[in-house]
Amino acid sequence: MVGILKRASWALPENTATPEAVYLQRRSLLAGLGGAIAATALPGFVPAARAQEDDQTLDLYPARLNETYKIDRDITPGEIAGQYNNFYEFGSHKQIARAAESLKTRPWMVTIDGLVEKERQIGVDELIRAMSIEARLYRHRCVEAWSMTVPWTGFPLARLVDFAAPLSSARYVRFETFLDPAMASGQRQVWYPWPYVEGLTMAEATNELAFMVTGVYGKPLKNQYGAPLRLAIPWKYGFKSIKSIVRMSFVEERPKSFWEQIAPSEYGFWANVNPDVPHPRWSQASEQILHTGERVPTLLFNGYADQVAGLYAGLDDERLFQ
Ligand SMILES: Nc1nc2c(c(=O)[nH]1)N[C@H]1C(S)=C(S)[C@@H](COP(=O)(O)O)O[C@H]1N2
Ligand SMILES: [Mo]
Image (cartoon, rainbow, N blue to C red; front, side, top):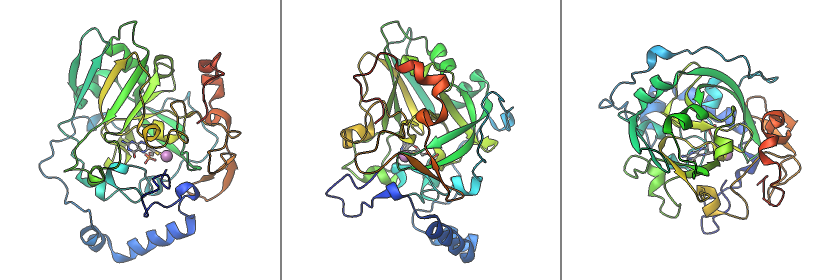
């Protein structure tokens, strides 16, 4: 997603992703250093936060797999998915897992506000217990043309929308990530429009595929995935799947997302996956499977057309695929 801030000389065109070979080399280098040395010697490392309150949902994992969401691709190994993340709050590269250890995920309050019957705040553990969780296998396709297959755990966003009791005047849901530059080094990069914001229409948010994620690989989310609460919107480019959510607002006006604010000609509100609509600077016709390096054709709506194409009927004038 970088390369678009002209003033930023460090911005590499990441659409090519990290070539797998280089990436694997880097991993074996780290492994060779020995965990202990690597853990203490690298910048950004913060010792396991002792002050952190415990996650009160551990007993809910692993959750039952919902077999409705089948997939014809291999699951990406957790060691690979967990070492290749986009989370600009902790750096504009992919190896942010260690820096993300400074994210304090308990206590964690989620605010539900805007056009709702009653605004409220709820602790994330209480929320997760109220929603009841399940596992689902989803494709995850970044706009940079790499993809993975991930076993998320969470609950349908529709259930949370129900719980929030929005007014009929609500047209969009706006999501916001935490804002804490002291905790998240990336947020000290003042040229980005923090906090990260994303949005969905009410119809999208209540589609059965829209998933609020609390865990992955049978356990609660590790920080780098956007703990303790993030979205998975599998038919859209990955940047719509906002991490570490603290606020969900029901609004009348279309929210302007983080990437749309930075580069409106490249990243729009809809961002549905479409192999026939190139990014202004690269093709979206194919994608690289992260853990094999194999290049495969990209699918319309990332393979979820049956479930979601109907959401976009009559919206032909909109930039649905960017
Ligand atoms: N708050 C926040 N959410 C975010 C991002 C981010 O930088 N900050 N990156 C997005 C992008 S571009 C992608 S591809 C996915 C990556 O999710 P993953 O690291 O779990 O694969 O998170 C999305 N959500
Ligand atoms: Mo992405």
